Length: 409
Image 1 (cartoon, rainbow, N blue to C red):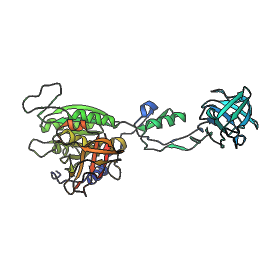
Image 2: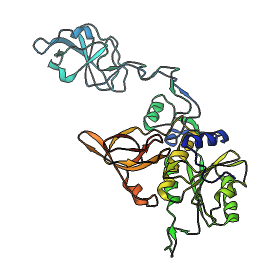
Image 3: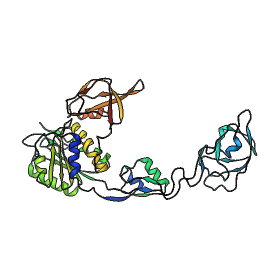
């Protein structure tokens, strides 16, 4: 068995896991509403040009730009109003020099027009004449045919995580179904003789199961299909049976609790009996979350998460979320893209990566981060926080007033 608490760095632990991961769960075809938040298994290319015609971006008048040069309020360019563009209809006819057509937002430019003058910059003298008070250049207030996408152009690459705007792009291209990675099935086991269902009144020395529901929500938010597999006491045979069933049914398994040193903690021992390579590490040089077990059993990742809710949630973000989204790990830690100014000193042990719960606010035009202090067993501290701030291992703390990276919840 892997020696307990021979703590690895986050990078080392990830590399160990990645080296033993089996193939991901496969791909399936999904409609656009079902594809949100999922990863493309195949690249998508445009078939048609979008838009298929030049269209106006404003209400106004379709014109030839050269007919408006030099126009001003004191000396308007007068044009003959000879046509009108109707929505959803092809513009039949041609705009000749010195002419203008009334056009709505989204309307198709008539042949001969290359710009649109906003209605606010015009005055209609009569039903046949319009005065232009401001010049336009060719292309002004116009989306040209194919400006959004051209036939054969790569719309989205394989591996892209689909966002709401991506669904709009695909819909514009006429793509209504895409091949995406199948949602990973995540089995969640809560362990410990002291843990009881939330529906029960805890007795002396007992606590309600919190972690299962935090982890279920995190897995769901990461695009997985989580399944609660119940509470297992500190019994080797019972845990072994539950783990075996979980690995048969799921792509990734989480065990909450049973990862710290103790005569009754049996998760690591059980994992080593189920398949190769078994436990890869027991302990990560982070706070919170040090007593984490990482294993791979026949290509499937299994994590023994600490029993404290904050610790379990932090480890999930660092190790499980990337797998559920990409089935791999990025070259560096997950992005901590929000830069916030820390409001108090925070100390950190040398060689340890710290993840601090913070409450964000805005003061004097910049984002501030107020640390939420409290033990990792207090779920309320996680609820009050807006995100996690990161202190790298090479720093022994952060001074008040320093900028710090934050990952939003």
